[in-house]
Image (cartoon, rainbow, N blue to C red):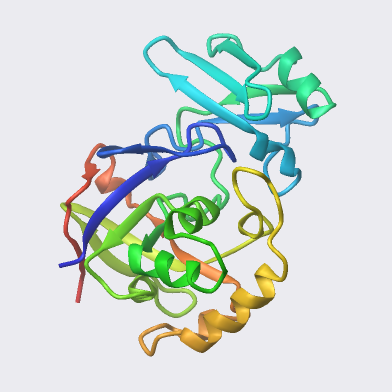
Length: 259
C-alpha cells in the first residue's frame, strides 16, 4: 500500500528541514510553516541556495510558540536568536555572515514557494531516493532526501512510482493522501542545489550529467515522457484545491490515485 513515510517542512527557505508526523493544509494550498520565513537581500529577493552555497553553512531552529528563530553557523557554532515579531529590517548577524545587507521576511499565508503556481507539497518515494543515491558513490538515501528537498516521502511503492502523479501538459492527475485531494502537475525541474552536499556545500563532480543519463535510462513506462524536455527532473509538484484547506496530512496516510 502506498502510504506517507515522512513529512518535512522547511521553515526557513533553503535551510534544513524539520520532520513532523502531521501537517495542516493552509491557503493557498501549502503545508503550514513550509518556507514561511525567507532571508532576503536589499532588493527583497530571497537569498537561497541557488544563488549562494553559503546557506549550507547555516542551521535554523524556529520556536513558533515564542515566535523566535535561532541561526547557527555549522563550522563555528556561532549562534543568534531573533524575534519574528521584528522582521523586514537589516539583520546585522546575517548581513555579516553573507557579506551583504540582508533581512528576514515572513509570509504566514503560503510562504515563499519555488513554484508560484504549484504551491502544494512536493512528493517523492523512498525507493526513488534509494535508487538515485545508488548512482553516486558513498551517497545514502538520506543524503539524497536532503539534496532534493521533497515535502512528502511515500513508501510501499517501487522507485519512480510518483511519476504516476502527473499527466500531459495542461492537465493534472488527482490523487488522495488520507482524505486530502491533491492534483499532481508536473515532474519538478531541478536546479544547482542537488549537486551539492547539503551539509558541507561541496559540489559533486558531474552530478547533473550523471543524473540526466540515469534518469532517462530508468524512466518507467508509466511516466508521461512528453513532460521531459530534459531529464534533470525529480519529484512531483502539486496543487491543493481550496476545498481541502484546513485538512491534515499525516504519516501513515494511504496515497491513492483517482481513476
